[in-house]
Image 1 (cartoon, rainbow, N blue to C red):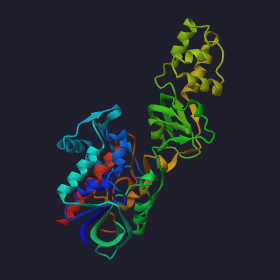
Image 2 (image 1 turned 180 degrees about the horizontal axis):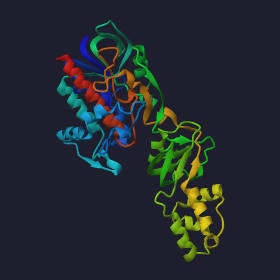
Image 3 (image 1 turned 90 degrees about the vertical axis):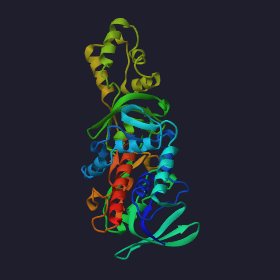
Image 4 (image 1 turned 135 degrees about the vertical axis):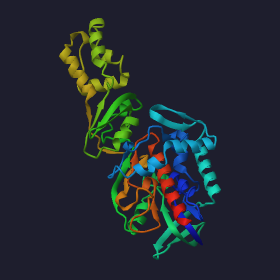
Length: 394
């Protein structure tokens, strides 16, 4: 069976590409349903983009690569598409946009756009062998237990990265990219909880506080969540993309810098109370108990000098953590690294060394922050490849 374009992966990027690629397009995916990552994202409401999206919100060995696609298909363009399908949405914190009702609306929208473009979708279909004869790609795929031979002028790798393997994620796109001479940037889990071998925070599991988390000089101010395994919450997930094993993460539990003023006032007004009692007016009691044991916080607030209070605040604002690892791809929202952008056109996402081969979405070495940025990269890169394919097919 011959097609103009075959897209491997019916996720956000793959379906977006299919909606714009024109010609006879086939999307294949081994899953039972399309858009599974879309479906589970944002608590089932899909954080589909971010109002503040810029290239500065992405990590890549080439920080300039993502600029072209992001500028040509923006968050505002995707909002126009959402509006055309009458999908209601709302903004949460930090520019994050979610569906009012369900993430399934985004999947249904993409399927409608694919249908309007004439693209076909084959689910429960796995690519077993891929080759190129100098003019066309040839694929042997297994569909419902039957081997089917396919060919196409264009092949798009949109099967994502390694994160969340229970959903079928694998390094398939990387293997095929390497088969055709593209390089890889080393991959690792990103937007992932950090762990400690001694499970030191198990006693305060479930406690969450606003804080600043910093790793390798990059800091994020959001919630930090203590878990049985270690540290999580938006601030920690964000810095996990900048952290490597063996390095430290510094937590500032007083991001507004008001603790010292509070303690000095308490020294005057509540002098007979223990320092730990005063701290429970600011932090959850279980966290204060943990801090008092780790930092040796004792004595009455009235007996503390300014220097002692300043020293305590410094420890709370510079609480050094040294995680032993992360929860890995099992819970990582995305994969850092991927197909090296040096081998791709930033305008079309096409491989520089093989005409007709495209790589989009999470498979590329472009990783967004938490908050809708990775979906915007999927829309932008999928659109860039799709429109380039459509222009070349005419």
